Length: 359
Image 1: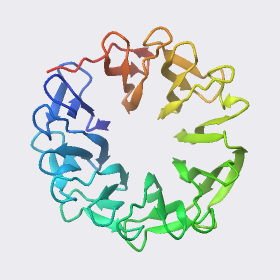
Image 2 (image 1 turned 180 degrees about the vertical axis):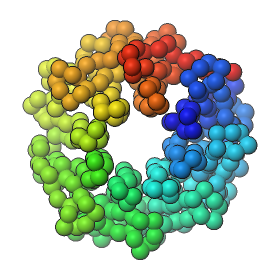
Image 3 (image 1 turned 135 degrees about the horizontal axis):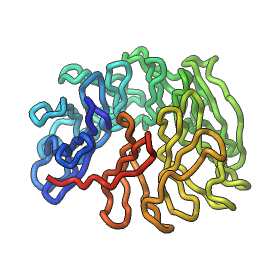
């Protein structure tokens, strides 16, 4: 991710395993920041999130297990925030999300199950927000999404099943938005996305229908937009805001995906939908070049493959698309150098050779 003008990411080399690295886009400027787990064991760095100039992430060390860490970009400034699950078990923080300067995440302290937490980067400011599914059971939180400063997410509890929730960071302000499927049945809410200040999401019914919904954070303002497709083989997923327009991946049993990149009944399986200066970049398989990097301006003719990095039908399998300035960084395998860091210059749309990460 882009943090303080540099690319921060997790990587392994011949000496260190799964640690925090940074890069300014040059070979000499690509450096190890810190080993949280010393030696060849993996630090398991995940969920890098910038909150007002502090980089939060989940990492493993030998004394605390997998816990919440923070960094200012230096080795000495990379420290564990709190041992939430005391001992070596680890609370397993995940879904780190910035909401107007407050970090929200999901963790298990060994008492209440996996629930909603928040942190201001201090030991005392890292606390449980609410035990949504009371007792030791997990609330199964997912899709943490911020819209106009409010945190929306999906959670489960016995009375209403799996539904849409929101939080302002307080216990009292963490509430169910709407019981879309009344009673304890699940509405299967998923794929939350902020599109120009409106929350869009997907929900299903018991007949297998899949519908697009939107919400303003109130029960009355949480309504179905359109039942786009129906039937158990239908899907809507990967909602993304691109210049105020909603893009998503869809399929039904008759026509395959909404934009038929993989002609015939095959699926191009688009993923990693990423907004880049009003355009959509994503990964897809057209059945000819394998899974490669694509872009779209929202029209059929303007939806094209950017480059065939791994020539032939294998595909380079790009992942973790990250925008920094006029460059899109991503991981890919060209079949020669293995899986390495790649860069796409947006001004000339040319894919650079991989940055080989060595000391």
